[in-house]
Image (cartoon, rainbow, N blue to C red; front, side, top):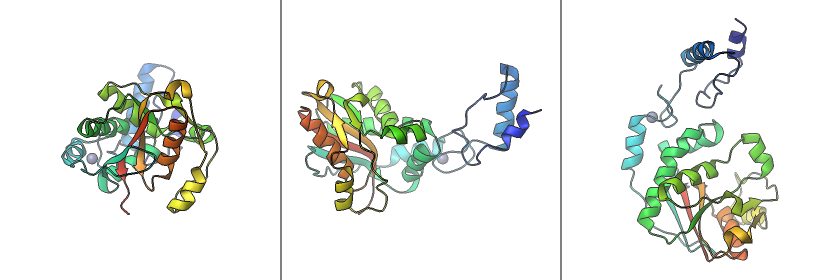
Length: 241
Ligand SMILES: [Zn+2]
């Protein structure tokens, strides 16, 4: 069976991200192939690593019981900035899986959390815009995790999601390990907003993690330049400082 040779090339630890039915010519052998792959690389929960489908009931219960932080921090030129959790534990693991293990389905419980927090915050938002990724990085990863989160939050909040309102036209090196000043310099003028989509809007910017706020500030500045009436920011998690 030539397909078995292909199984050995699967990266271990990436069960959620694999493409199903990649070689099988008909649905019966595809199901057999999928069953074999599940046997060799059982799907694991992105929160705790237990063998389960994607996101287990225990992690979901933990996520639902994690209280929403009450504080809204000032982050000029944004009108308010909040995060649904501290970047640690299961939330941190889930975001890591979403970004680096192709676990796109994790955008659902995390996006639900964004929508629930937005309802508590009661901000007068008219549309949701994800922090964009440069096209080169998008081509490498295949998806923008901030956009998946924004789309899910928008569905629940019944708001339009406008990923085209903002683009990252300058490729910026990774921000990891940089301080706030260096990050501000790194992302300055890296974003451009569409006046047609931003004008008069009260925008909710969505990203996965809040670290120094440099990226969110640069995005907000571009949206306000393009005529947005106000910009708020909401991320799934915030790094402790
Ligand atoms: Zn779990």
